[in-house]
Length: 147
Image (cartoon, rainbow, N blue to C red; front, side, top):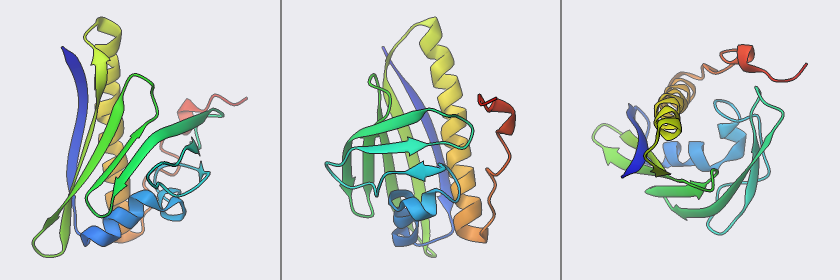
């Protein structure tokens, strides 16, 4: 059995706006990451940083289908798939699925944590794209590993 982490949310913005909000680092740094070495584009390898951690996270195996799908690897055991679906009234359904880990106790914990993490990603993106609110700002300061 392969474990999956899943989350989905409707965002009240057109699919083009939501897509750009995921692939464009100038937008993504407003609600998710603190730094990116570039735009999510097919074939690129990027480095992401988060405000809470000093670590750098390599983003590899990037594949992008405009306004439909973004896939990447940031954990060598898993693949992240973000799919976008246009809905009526200029809304977009965003689905995130990260899968690939084998069933065991440690990976069950991973699946639970990452499901919450992806739900947070979607909530922060929704707050920023719809209302300009930086929902993530300060939310995880308690996790900082810096001294």
